[in-house]
Image (cartoon, rainbow, N blue to C red):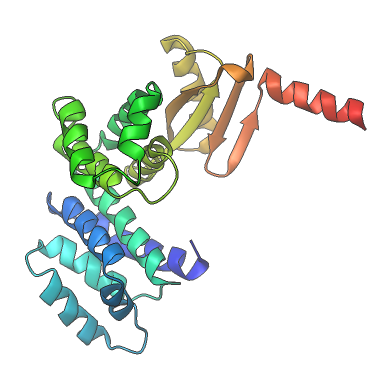
Length: 258
């Protein structure tokens, strides 16, 4: 995301610090879907030559059935400068995830759990993450799989990501949504890649250590990668701490090659 879009998003996110209507998250995700499919609408809403009042009127006309919370976020967003229409839609999508997290503080944990299920089945990743598959069929499959296992808010985010694949695999999209949800509740998501599952005691110790490093609560998302051989790779935001055996072997190979 470009610098202009990042600044715009950071300003609008502050609206979610106050009371948020329970429906706002689903409404903003629906708006993001509409903006991706309607380029003319997106262009009109980020047109810097248009007045704020005119764009607010357009928001009210197109999204008039939304809650006041969702409309306020959309109107505020159109008053900012975005790098392009695609990033505007992506920003509204993130705001939708944050709005769900504002009313469902367990959202990040639930999204991580769904990502772990998807990771455990190549067929599931392929079927739910395919851009070629029918979105309605994928949404129905996701509801059947997870409908009775996660909250309504989590299911809203999952089905949105399933029916609107932005690119790449589904599991990373779910983990990125979990990171956004965690940040909205004042926590940081750490992705820990290990050669084998970690027991509860080790996860707890690791969580405490990472919380001290990050200076805020850390939630852990675990990915199993047998190619690491041993050790851990930890990623917090853009920082990677690689203590895996495979990384040390790669370093050794580079030294020998030099």
